[in-house]
Amino acid sequence: MTAEILVLAPVPPFTLERLDKTFSTHHLFKAADKEKTLAELAPKIRGVMTSGGSGIDAATVARLPKLEIVSVFGVGYDPVDLPACRARGIHVTNTPDVLTDDVADVALGLTLNVMRRFCVSDRFVRAGQWLKGNQPLAEKVGGKTVGIIGMGRIGQAIAKRVGAMETTIVYHGPRKKDVPHRYYPDLVAMARDCHVLIAACPGGEATRGIVSAAVIEALGKKGAFVNIARGSVADEKALVEALVEGRLGGAGLDVFVDEPNVPEALFKLDNVVLYPHVGSATLDTRKAMGDLAIDNLVAHFGGKKLLTPVP
Image (cartoon, rainbow, N blue to C red; front, side):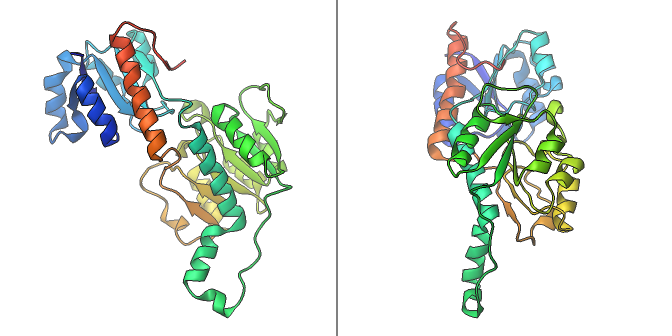
């Protein structure tokens, strides 16, 4: 196709290769002088490929007079200025479903890691500490109450996995869902009743800081917080302070506020497991995400119905 596509953020090489073969592409993220490159390309760009972490802001949208569609490589689209796009009738698509299982797997893995102290145990053996005695006892997962913030596709997939371990699942969200789990309209009350709290909600202003200092305090020394959503959903300052001071039992974190910068205070804590935002990072899933992102562009410029438009 002859449509001019601007690639704002890095995507996997196999995705970029297919995109280059399908459209006339311009890799802005590789440009030495991005401002000059954007100024030269802006008048002819009809489509944008971006990532769920980078998005596109209103100022960039305004500079692209012929822009028709923004295809997001990722399920999250909170960095995309939706009002700016919708004001001009610009379509926005993302890549849901294809990454649900991988992200849910990571949520389960982080939960197990924090409760059963897998990473700590690995370091314990490698350091020769087992020769000196046994490691302190860990926490059983079965029989615990697990609270999930956000009972969408990913939240339900997490519930299925964690529920299989004979836990009690409860959840919080903007509204009650048709699921066989207890709904808490009050997140602080849910945190108070939970042993593990898992954030699986979208990012953006509606959920910014939803895991507040009050929620963290309610979860308390008995509890663990797992975040595979967005760093912005937690009050990171309050979270770090609670972990350092021992007011929160533990945490498994795949996302942070200022990635890839992680609060250094967390590095020395044995009750914290740190992941580099790799919830969907498998070859199979990243290939499927890239194909879906491109297929949305192909559908649009081919005059067909978009596959996964942002609602």
